[in-house]
Length: 183
Image (tube, rainbow, N blue to C red; front, side, top):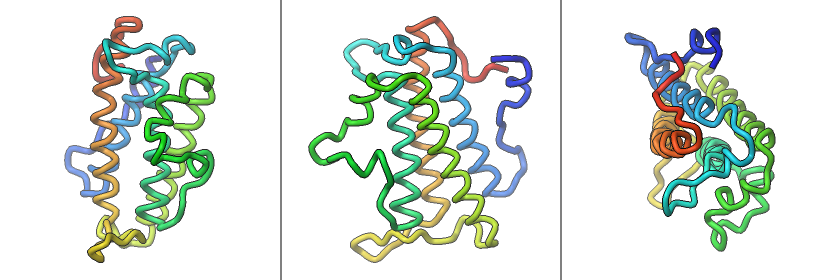
């Protein structure tokens, strides 16, 4: 990372609002994933550790899908757009991981960045209405419950945190990069 990028490392506020704290935690996880996958060529993004088939490129593609599907399905109550709507997830649940090797590093990074940007825009729009994290998404469970924005965001934080741990191990095996942030 460059010195200026390290200075811009997202840090959740120590005494912010609930929304600021949750969004800060999510942005820190996103930044960590971006850092752990930065500067690598196709071989680096295809590297695996041990018996696992998980790759850094696969993580980028999977988390792009998570970003898009969580907000489309849970918040908007809408089907996901391309490329996710062309996949038979019941028959190929690991599609994102499996097909990442077919994409270039730039395609993977762009797919993930654009998905995260769409999520940020939806959250910004939702929070601009003044409803806060208690606003309910459009998705309705079989029991009639709807997730609020807080739950959707916390699920994203959890998903990123799990996979950033995977990224730590994979990246260290590729070129020895370790740590939590570039700062």
